[in-house]
Image (cartoon, rainbow, N blue to C red; front, side):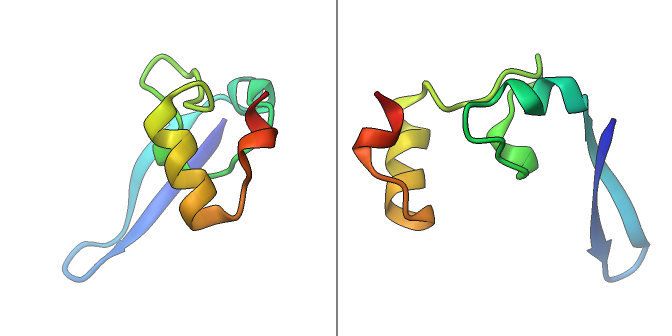
Length: 66
């Protein structure tokens, strides 16, 4: 399991999410951002909106998704 945490101003370190390592390894780009994964563990690499964000913000290109 890969566990994600955030720093909360009142509660300190708070666990936000757990994702199976095996699910993350299925992602073609092995993205290590919790929001990139759906609740069922699948990644969003096939989602057009996620692809657009990855191109715009993370430096991927359209060729990366062919």
